[in-house]
Length: 450
Image (cartoon, rainbow, N blue to C red):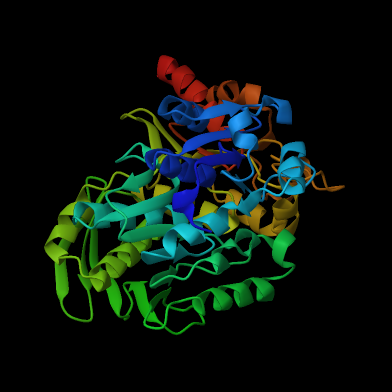
């Protein structure tokens, strides 16, 4: 398909973080953009301001006539949308060009130098760091992000079209539509078992992704993964290694050994060894691409993060409120490590909303272990997203597994009052569901109280 000849682009699920980045891209390319989403959000409002026409009811009658011309309209949908969705069914039954988001992303990247970030954890942060580094180094590039960059207040960074930086998403095997020139794999922990069935099938999919590299492509892998490539590690021997690590006023200061040289006194402002690892691999990919280490050092120091990735909502002497997207046990462990490193010997309360019945079922024991590390645990009901309930899989079941007496199952309406009852000065909200929509309310109420 020649995207240059497409006039109209219609999105089903336009408010999703990956979908909205694509919508921004097509709007910037002077295409007509419209779409459906289930609910209004900051993403849909931002797209409306840019010129997209969006409605929130699954009804073909709400689609304007110009998008009902199958010769001039590309339809893009997210796999989170049900195949029974009436608009999706209409387009499929009337000979439209209908493609998943991942297929269109593959089409966009195929005529550029593609840098792809894969892994079950760390994709969004790593991609946003890499996009920021490349942008700051003057590379003519476009980066598609799975989160809103604090530096650009967007999930799309545009500085040209010669290079694309993308998240390579393992969900639904979406990353197999890409043919990257540079690719990294940050992790291969079991996840999305509703799609893969078991961890071995997930690993096979990552191996298949490595075979998508162009003939002279470069693969980067975290040391310890069962793959051959350029390795990276924190305080371990590897092709790219971070060492001499110290923390000053909440900032990491460290050195990096590369195959060619040592880069001294790098600064990075995100807490947590997992984020330091993300910064290291982004730096390694940019160095191998050809960016100047001196310019990279300056760019890394100016990186601000991604919204809902260890984002400080309140940061005073008396109260710390952090919000994070963590929704897998390993991600929760990473947040726990970061907060303990930054605030040793202080009590921490976590509010967690499980995401998906299948993920809760598959990792209930691991979730319990990761959550019970915090001093106090408040647990919300499971956010279903695309799934129907599974009998016996509930937050009450998960709560019963947590070996910490300071735990309670609550509703979203009770979050702030339950926090206040416990008089703890470090609060963390976690989850990939609609808990993110509660953060502003919590912040406002806690700010008044503090």
